[in-house]
Image 1: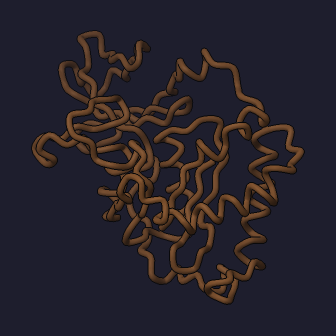
Image 2: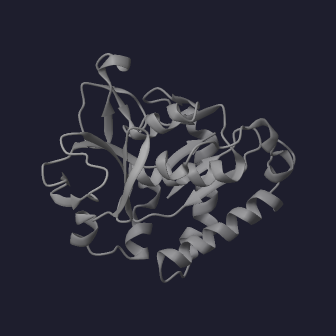
Image 3: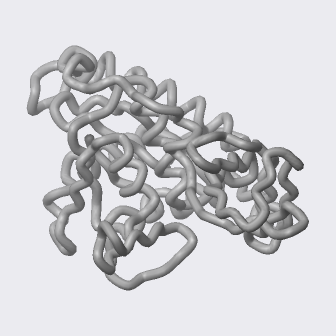
Length: 256
């Protein structure tokens, strides 16, 4: 599960249940929060590798920009936040006190929903979490603030979400177009429309795993193709029980 709290009000501004822990799932949760409440000034996270800048590490989940980061690898989450003009802060390793608010929230959720739920699917579990979060924001009185999170939440302090969410909250890669007007991603060959001719040009791919592949060149969207997620095709879907077995260790603990 991925959750985001507003630090001032303690309101849960997003909460998503996923079968795996990934950068893309963190991006989807950030999208939910910002589409509802706008862009914060700062996003405070733990020290997970999906968030911090790491030197000399290469992976498909990172973007390398030598001219701007001088040997530092930028995570996909960091890239999206930079495009949104949101400052990313990660706490130092071993600083458990820095996660106190979000840890208490997840423990609260675990005890009241996750430990006793009878959901038969991830969709049903998500519906239970959504209902509980709404009740938490509107009815739970926080012992530190003396009021409910909803009463203290101030959406006016955030900024409107600008740009195309589909082209921000995604994974990004570049590929060179071959002579037959195709490119390859993760062993899958994709064919572009014949126009415009992009042979030998590099295109930027905005990837939504298992859903869509948006192809950009020269500041224009030139094609949108179905994305083939080979990992999703290979792996059997996880049951709710399998997800819950590891939900706290795999939980992303985030706060605005």
